[in-house]
Image (cartoon, rainbow, N blue to C red; front, side):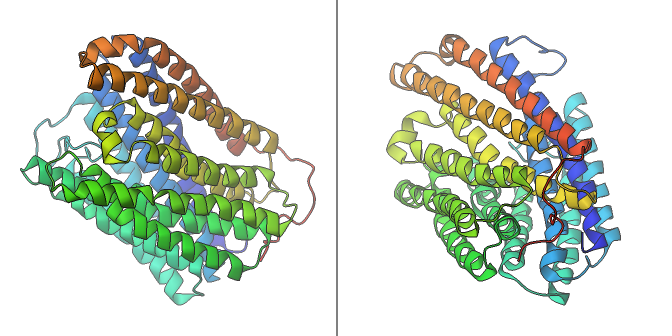
Length: 454
């Protein structure tokens, strides 16, 4: 490890993995509630469990992004982080805010209170004081990283990373705007939700993946940067107006059906570009890097993101199809594989690469790490197929035949049981990964790991 301030990333990764464990455990509980609806109905109602599941997902992914930034920016900028103390203060604010959210949700505290109570908007349920804390923490982060980059070497990777992180923070400000008109509310709500995961987060993903390819393959920086600019351009071109696929049925003008269908269809392009980029870089590099686990997660990220965000997103993005499928289990199938492929695998890839550096060791527990990849990935892929079939049946019975919602749910029991089985595999894989990261065991590898490839 070249720079001492990179150790900040270790604290971020540790908290992120703890929340990852919480997220997948709650996901398993919710999966069982689909099978047995009265399970924990008085202790942990489904709506509370779902809020905790989705909120912990968002927070741990963000902490992973922040940790990745604190790890890679010093290497790219060739200088220490501007203020390690500010970075730790930022983490403390996130931890306190997360604890406040969990207590508020679980015990339904301050119900109806403007400042302290549940915000009520899906994915943005955080109380107002927590939202303010998130903005403060984001400003600390952006100041810290921006000052580091401005004072050091500028690269395409840090430029794109900063663009994505600044966009992420600025778009979150729409979380504070909650108009009384429901159609307008949803229109601005998607500015946060869609333009995060299909806009700014894609820039973060592309920059971190480019950094990993640079280090793992040894391909020239110029080649990687050209790919990076093309991917980012297509992501922004398709993603911004692709927001229109959420505007089909919320009361917005009819032209959004055409804009949404055309531009969201093009959202497949950047994800295909990322997949092609990753495999071409590995092929061109022909470098036998000792950290096989990080390389596996990187290639898995690009591949599963293409299928989850690209192919499964396209399945129900055209307005003529979406008219029947929106809000069904097809949406859940797309969401699970897209988030896992694009962002979960990305965070686990950078953690797999950085952790040996941060702990001053050679790559360790790689067999366990790679086993965790195959176990988790197989679980999520099987879950995606079961939810896709469940959604197809649900669409026909509910939207075409007109059967009642709960009557249809009863007929999907077998799919939900299979989905729960895949959830067990995901949790076991997550446990295996966390164990592999937490308890290093020295492995026999080729020397030279701590010499980064340029």
